[in-house]
Amino acid sequence: MSQIAVMKNPLSALGRRSISMIQEMGRIAIFFYRGFVHMFSLPLQISKIVQQIHFIGMKSVFVIVLTGASTGMVLGLQGYYTLVKFGSEGLLGAAVALTLIREMGPVMSAIMVTARAGSAIAAEIGIMRISEQIDALETMDINPMRFLVGPRLAASLISFPLLTAIFDMVGIFGGYLTGSVLLGINPGIYFNRIETSVEMVDITGGFVKSLLFAAIVAIICCFQGYYTHTRSQGFGARGVSLSTTSAVVISCVLILVTDYVITSFLL
Amino acid sequence: MTDQPFIQFRNVFKAFGAKTVLNGVDLSIYKGEVTTIIGKSGGGKSVLLKHIIGLAVPDSGMMLFEGRPFSEMKRAEKKTMKRKFSYMFQGTALFDSMTVFENIALPLVERTSLQKAEIRKQVEEQMEQLDLREINDKYPSQLSGGMQKRVALARALVTRPEIVLFDEPTTGLDPIRKNAVHNMISDYQKKFGFTGVVVSHEIPDVLHISQRVAMLNEGQILFEGSPEELRNTSDPLVQSFLKGSQLTVDG
Image (cartoon, rainbow over all chains, first blue to last red; front, side):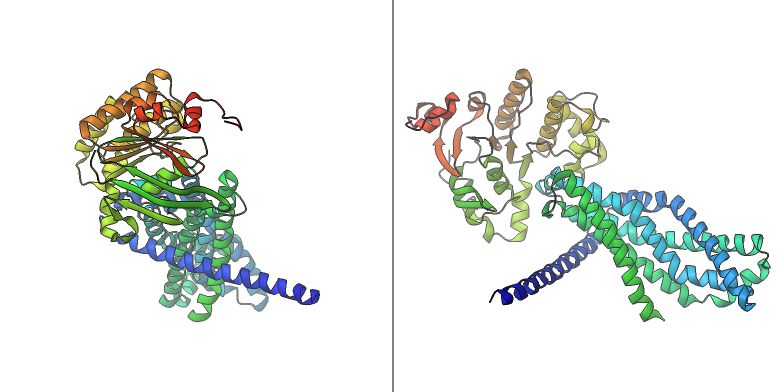
């Protein structure tokens, strides 16, 4: 009998965990739906969206340029020494550009923006929750989803593809720096290979990915902050710190998992 | 006093986990009056207030507004009803990343289509009445606790609400400002005729501005009546609370 009980407990624990995960996914889906609807609810919150574009997009440009340049330069180095073994170093431009446009650009820029702006979004909304500022909005009949989530989601959807484009462009020049300037590949060949190998479908694929990552990051970070008070492991400042950590970890994991899923459909 | 209560609690229960906070509350709040809720700290007074504005929902029992159960109202009706309310939080709940001016102006900016100049006029008028000068561009964290309270009060009153809920509006204020806030609630109430619900420990000061008093004890309304009736009641628990003394086991 006791053996059955031992067998039963892990199963019920697994069941509980699974049900709670499914419920959480449902809550996130509803949260996304409400946030999405409130992006367009009238009157449009143009000034708030612009403010958020400044925060999420504009203020991330420096870090995106920095990581884009580093990634491109590393790709240039690694690609050169791999391709040179096969005597195909002339293909470096194509290798760097395709890797950046299809994969590295959307993924790396999404992860960098999560680290810089996503964590800040989760912390800000979390603090607003624990200090009753979100309750205050409700008492004023100001919809918190419209006021807080709508503009951040809209700003992310606008900023992420643009940041990805900057990342790709800077990365390609980073590859040029190491591949051509440092290691001597003819610049004409480097850029010509890019022109002939990159197709519109690659750019569209990267664009679609960056849009999806934007929605993931904005929603997960807002969701974690918004429901800080429902965490069972921590209250107050500790709850906010846990929410911020969860927001970054979940966003990054989802970015990578979604990337695989989308890539498998796109290829 | 009209016969029909404006807001009515009918046998309202509310528990948080194992802790029952409201244990069958029956309470009537009448239009155009200031009702003060007194009771021990941590006794559920703020929770009671949050039920009125919809931040908390009863586990069982019923909330009625103008005789109609809130749960049966349509969405649009609830929205219209909610717009009549204003709430002043115990911990102020000011938006800490906005300036004082932006905080007070927010309900006007978000809920009305007033021009910027008109909003500025109304906000500055409100600030003037509450003795809030030259702090437009300051952030809440740069203000003293008392001043934050007054900013929260200004935000609560700027929309000229019909029902204002005050959660300990004078805690942390000096006696002069405390009286000023009490007078202001009273003056505003007379001027605009709003219905006020005040949670307060400031006895007897708050009784001077109240038409009705309710005492919450162990999750139930122990006393409900006029301040005069409160003073004359023979209930030992009420008297003990008013005198600030602990009731002994044998009473």
